[in-house]
Image (cartoon, rainbow, N blue to C red; front, side):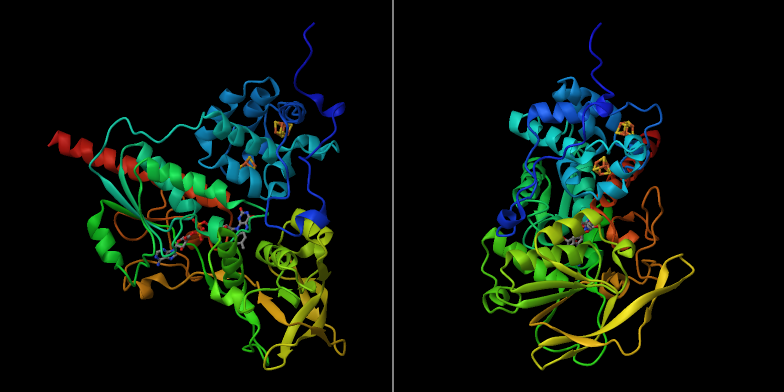
Length: 478
Ligand code: FAD
Ligand code: SF4
Ligand code: SF4
């Protein structure tokens, strides 16, 4: 009888691709995980039990056909696995690297629930498309027909790029406007190279450009061009501008030199990795080298900042968070990686203020967790008389992001927003209150995830294509 290829989870243990040793990886910005070797990828994919109702798939925002591409990988049909994987995901190699799989697909894998350790879905997804690039299976974008309709996309992050890809493949004329000098949004300037190497993102930018997507970079909508000019130049517009307004710190000394915003700190570091000369990095303002660094916040941005500071050669790196480990929003896997690399977490601690004109310390208040609030999360409460000063030469604020006030900035009061300032958009079509204007990603959801931005971008592109089809049908009927 032929050997059963799948359901190997009982005899084959879960294994991730090799992770570089902390004392080696903490000196550079290369990714920390190696690639699976072919045999290892096949073996790990074969652990899947091919569930009839795959919870991994229902918890993947893109509803990737995970069981089928695992089966194809396990049985050596890698090209088919690639074809299937890219049908539902515009950037599988990116999601495979940076999705918080422990909260999405892998966290809901049934063999994880039964104590065998999840199938390493993300690592296999990355392996499939990395191999497809190496083997030349990833074909250039060449639409079968060129169409007259044009779409203007504001924002070259994952939401905007996913829409650009889908629209261009359908022959639509696409122009992407972005205020940065490189595309990719937070994939390029937010997320550090040790999670996502930059050539992975640039490869996708090249593919889109080669496929006929026009990029107008260094173009800040609202300054260099008006929103209404973009609207007038295209049949439809997609807003995919993300959220960049940093939540701020209050308290004495909070404007001192040496207290910086996470986005500025990470952008500078990413630019340096590209080989750019960054004045604020050279001057030491946005450079942790030799410093005692305190990062304030407990989300993924904070994790990226502490790990960046380690790589820049900080003297010490501490992360201050007002709740405890179990209640932090950041991925537990990233916390473990940071700890391995030498970061110290100071739980149940909040900043009260700062000492020094040029910051030299954080005044820390100790907290305990009290009763849950309306959302069910325990509220941090102050412990009186337990304050102390934590030494710091560089403080990074990583408390989250809020939307910019686009209706005001762009002089478009008709563009409706929610009470949080995010753009109001239909959850399926992503249409906004303005005719022919759509919005996706963080500017609609608030700070979220790459995989959700991709899903939104794909859905908005589909809605625009349907709109164009309906319009063509009406014209033909006249
Ligand atoms: P963005 O990626 O923010 O792109 C928006 C683009 O719009 C930018 O290029 C910006 O320059 C441009 N833009 C904005 N305003 C204008 C304007 N007026 N004119 C022209 N262009 C404009 N998610 C994960 O899934 N995994 C992670 O590991 C992860 N790590 C993260 C780490 C950090 C430090 C941060 C900040 C976020 C992280 N996220 C992560 C979240 C993820 O990056 C975002 O959810 C995602 O990038 C949102 O995509 P987007 O397309 O909506 O916006
Ligand atoms: Fe998992 Fe993200 Fe891939 Fe979906 S896209 S299968 S959630 S890694
Ligand atoms: Fe395979 Fe796990 Fe998905 Fe089931 S839940 S199909 S075992 S990956």
